[in-house]
Image (cartoon, rainbow, N blue to C red; front, top):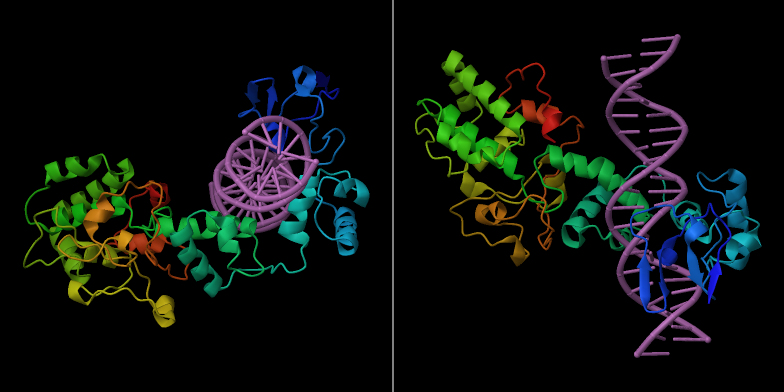
Length: 354
DNA sequence: AAGATCTGCAACCGCATACCA
DNA sequence: ATGGTATGCGGTTGCAGATCT
């Protein structure tokens, strides 16, 4: 027996986005709104709330007051009946969300502290997008708040610093660019086209434009380019890099303005708070190192393992601190421009790489 | 000054799952 | 074991204010 719901403007929500008639299972996967003119429910199964006439959108202070007052007296829970009992024209789900994400008295509001941000990044490197799990370790912060902060601040910053926010590993396009530029610009020979073509598929086309521009600069004024590269230890003019397979990670570090030593043996992974505050850091992949892989739970890992990781692959995420701590300045264009301190050609927006 | 674009965040949506009858 | 309901979770959307052109 079927009960036809009379509303034609309501929509199926939450747990009721799927239903059964006999042995047939119906699922509404894509449509957010579902006209009920043709929708039938099995008798006895009703939506969690009748959306007809229920308010959506931003909460008013009056609604907040009603909800808070009700919960203070009766406690949170039983969200299905709560709106009616509290005199609210809202869905229970909406009430729960408003309470847990905004009205709860133990919510800490305001900017995230440096320590909180560090904690989020470290936990995300382990837990991935398990926002509720991360929130559970940050008292006073909600999963929604952390998720928003990650998407609007931390994620962008990691991207700009050449770190894949999914894997917490250096991004391939940055590594390849560093490799190409290190090889080609430092070389006294003409442009190694095959190297460029070999990496082309991995690169954002605009990165190629940038590389080409730098190549042109080199041809026009090679001494200036080489002088600057040497000044910034981007390459060793006495032993020019000829093989792009040897990734000059040091160059990348320097390129991002993070001030790493050119001595690879001295590279370490700062973990102390003072290092966090003074040095941006990224894992140092070296092709020749015997450093453990991320799966070892160690902060160090080889470049091979990085290269084998798809840029947007699901995260194994058992490596900790495999991220670059950003510099406190927000404008990472600066860090990229510091690659060579050359003027970026007009019309080439570095943000497009991000 | 005004329109366009960007940004941050609250709220929504659909799915998964725990719980209970 | 099965089905119905409640709740939790993560992804996405939409809006308001800020910034840019």
